[in-house]
Length: 381
Image (tube, rainbow, N blue to C red; front, side):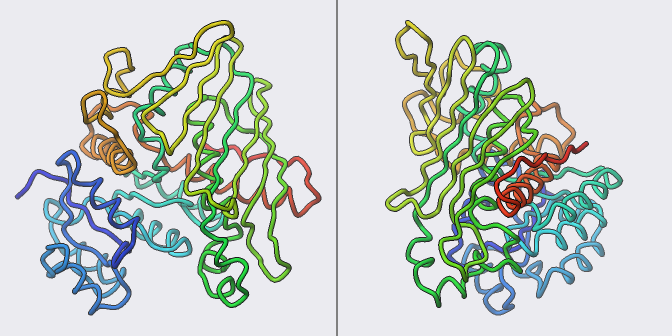
């Protein structure tokens, strides 16, 4: 029997980008072996896809409930140890709940659930299950983001004064302006996506990232969201003001109608000694800005970087590390936790990150609907 962690996958079949990303990431450090799953709700397509990617079909199941039932029949040293949930948002909660209740470790795409209440339920179940639960806020795996986190943690910026994240995409433009398309895509359907599109999809990345790198907690938000059309129930653009711990202020700007933008995610943190800036489309560069001094540029793979950054660096200096590497680093951290090995708390986002992300989505929508007022983020333990 292989010593690799036995991984099952839910969703991510066909031409799904997120499916490819997770499968490649899981193989990156030779920690996992994909043993089966449910890639599609259509059994014929499910089996066909498994054959296409070279998996045996004896553990390709008709549906999620069958997967649970059949895997539990197997001995502990044979059944799936962790299951990745890559399905549309509305399926995250029931799948994660049943997996946790049956003793499986879970890797879940974000947003973790469609409501904060569901997220809180999962958090309580996890406390009893005592398994590992990770939420794939992918960008936390970049070496230079981890370097930013460690520099701030070690006081390179001094006292944090301001946090700022901008996440701009333009992909929804061809959909939102066509009434038939915007009424048919699951992204703009509250029953499948939750109460938010833009804030729920990419705004949560910005929320989690600012807390991850800066160490401050976002305590309250004031949001102004854009729905563009009266028959569209889901935000596709928004600006959220932030009040954080230690009197830090900040802003999150997120948009999926930023025409011409591809995946422009920019993270900036400013202290009383220095500031840092990182851009997802140029992820190998971390900029350190200080008054009266030349701009400093940090790059991955060099000995001057932190242990956390270097642990997530696979290539020599000068070789680009990208989003597959970032997701791979998250899978690597989860493997350490499953194998009960020592690991840095910054190696993968946890259930708490997922719960706080759901609170952020709901409070941003609540703030907007109540006339752009300040609303407190729920505290979680």
